[in-house]
Image (tube, rainbow, N blue to C red):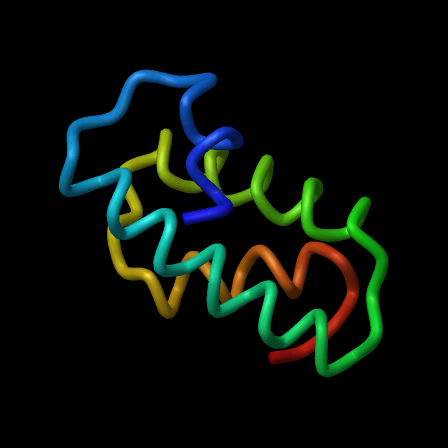
Length: 74
């Protein structure tokens, strides 16, 4: 799982981390389809962390809101 290093910066339980990784992988796939650079993926990871800190645990919502933060609609 490529996303794990991003999510090791913060303390989440195993279930939350799994949801975050799932959301990140979905977002990365969308970004790859849009030919976005790796910097965008790092931003998405940071945004997913921020959203998860608010208690969001739905991977689809995490993905969607992180991509929207970049100015893209998913």
